[in-house]
Every structure is written in structure tokens, then in C-alpha cells.
Image 1: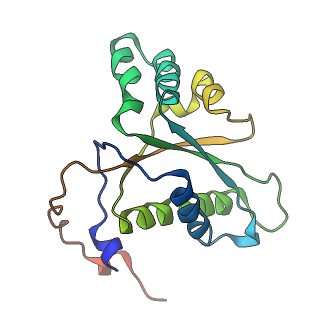
Image 2: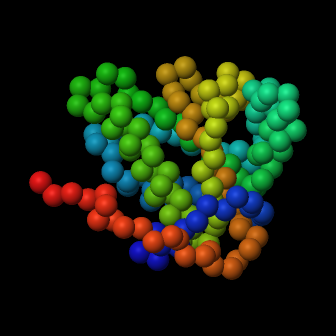
Image 3: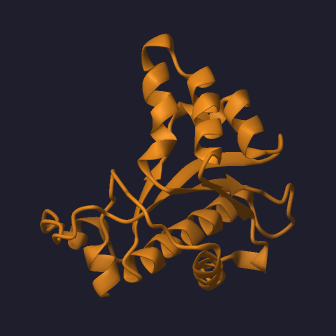
Length: 177
């Protein structure tokens, strides 16, 4: 409950980031998220070190001229980016594509909470570049797959607690049959 209530997106992240061993442990745990048919219709591509600059160049190719510099620098805002790739099982007889997408998104949400519970900061970033052929090629996204964005991961530079969220009336989103 604490992780759910206190998790916030962290727009700027510094090092360190989880190492491969810790990351794999957390991904293994996140893979228990709801997934009808246990299809695991997702995969993650890690982007660290100089690979962030390669991704930045691909993002720059996809950017309008006035945003090229920003695109080049975007992947440098965190020491680790997890490319989120949706890998639907086409024409599955029991699990429609929308449900497979829900499973992939559930894994990412669970992974964010697990990372937060370990003290790591994250921010899920996306944008029109996910459709770019340069970006898709850079990340290694196959034609039948969809790039859902990146989970920027690292250390939040400001350890102060986030301000409380605005009150939410859950009753406005719940009805009874």
C-alpha cells in the first residue's frame, strides 16, 4: 500500500540505476502480473551507457528540426531506459489483442511499483517517436510488435517526499449493477 500511495514519476534521474541482477529479479517478480493465458506478450530492451546516445540519434532523426537537440538529449535524462515492447500473439483463440496489451501494461505498472519499493525512481515516457522507423530499428522492434515507450530508471536526485496527490473521489468511478 505504501508503494502504491507514494510512487511518483521522476522526470530527472541520476545514477546509479539497478544493476542487471537486481533488474532481472524485479522483472521476474513483475511477470506475475495478470496475464490471461500466460502469454507474456511483452519484452524489455535495456538501454544504458553509450546506447543512450545511439537511441538519442534515432530519436533526433524522428524529430522535427526545432526539437532535434532535445531529442538527442532525451535518453540522457536517466542512467537506464527500459524499452517497453508489446509482442502480441496474433489471432489467439482465447486472448484478444487488447487483453494482451493490458497484460503488458500490467507488467510495467508492477515493475514501476517494485522499483519504487526498492528506492529507485522511474518515469514512463512515450511520444510519437515510438512509431518512427529509425527508433523502431534502433531498439529492434519487429513489424508485428509495438513500442510502448521507455521506463526511465535511476536515482531521484531529490529525496524529499512528494506532495500529496489531489483528493480523488473513487465513488465517481464506481457504479453498482
